[in-house]
Length: 200
Image 1 (tube, rainbow, N blue to C red):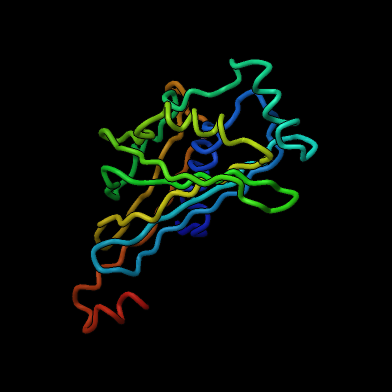
Image 2 (cartoon, rainbow, N blue to C red):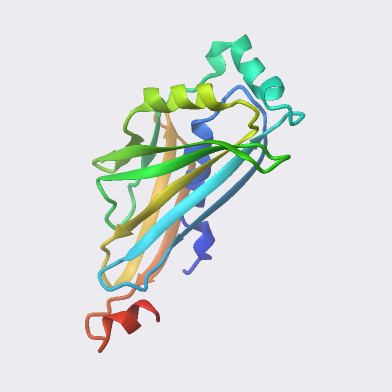
């Protein structure tokens, strides 16, 4: 089974990225993407991203920030969210980074951007410092009404033949979304030119 590359990691980024937002707000729309290339010898590069827009009048602080101040209980705890990569045949790196950006939908302006690290323990990926993530989101909502969450590209050294990339985005151990993709890994060891292999 071959799926569109944009489906790779999309469900997981929706869930994981949304989880880092405000559970007390109403979701308006989500845009997500993800892909893995199989053009490199000894594996491929994966990347993913998403944008979440919350219901409001575009007033930023008025539509989101003030609602947060009215009840601190709506703030999420990033420590309760994880990405379980069980079911994958491809190796995931032990660490990585993601860029979070606060945006204003009406103007397209990016009001804040920050890189955060994540770590993998066994099959489970979590943000390395959930308290820092929580504090940053709370402090930088500003006039924004959208948050994009982009995983920085990472290399996965899978081999040739059938491969699976899979994961379950969980909150407090409960699966909120999942992804599963079967694809064919390409091994270019016997290709006369590694450079040409990467461009195939």
